[in-house]
Structure formats: structure tokens, C-alpha cells
Length: 162
Image (cartoon, rainbow, N blue to C red; front, side, top):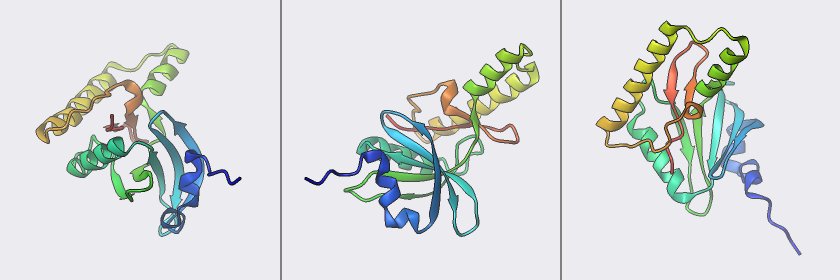
């Protein structure tokens, strides 16, 4: 009896993806999606490949990120792969950390997050939310784990689904 590969491995068997990306490791997993760190073969750019397992959730993520592509406080979608019979895979900019991890690290050091940084991030969150609302998009899952932070300290809204 033949056993199909688990859904979490489907990204590894898709020729359209492995022809363009080297999948390095899984960096996150949830009910609706798995996220992998990958390297784009054409220019060695490190990206996040988000494999959305739910059809509606995948569609919403793609649609939202297309509408919000010019906002500096929204995660960048470089491209996506989507066929009706397969999971959607979004190619996103790779951001190493989220606001939840930054806050947790600050708690461990007992240094706290500087007030100026909190103000700057608050403005960036509001800019991202404003861009969503101007495009008639409701985020639905706004939390510190979905607020990603770039290496240069720019906060970006991520995970437009459910």
C-alpha cells in the first residue's frame, strides 16, 4: 500500500519550487501553514517560503499582500506558486525575528525596550494597519508574533490569513 507524503513535505517535491529555491530548514509551523527558510538560486537571496495548507487562507494572504505591496511596514511578497490541487506557497522576505522575541529578549536582559524604539514601532504598526484599512483589509490576527522586525529595525505586519 502506497502512503502519500505528509503535507509538510509537499513543498520539497514541487518541481516549480525546487527549480528556483533551495529549501534550507523549516523555521515555523502552525495549523494553517509551514514556513521554511530558503535561498533563491538566481541571486542567493534568503527568503521565507510559506506553505499555506488552507485554500481560503492562502487566497486571502496572496490577495492582501498584492494590494499592500508598496507599504514599507508590510512584509514583502516576491512571488507565489498556486495551483488549485496544491497548497499555495508564498515567497516572502525573510525576517529573522518578531516583536514577541524582541520583548522576551529584553525581559531576560532586564533592560527593557527603549521608549524611543517603542514609539517608533508603534508608528510603524499604525502605518501598516492604516495601509490595510485604506485597502479594505482587516488583518484578523494582529499580535506580537505577527509583527516581524527586519535587521535594520523596521517593523512589518505579517501573516494575513484566517
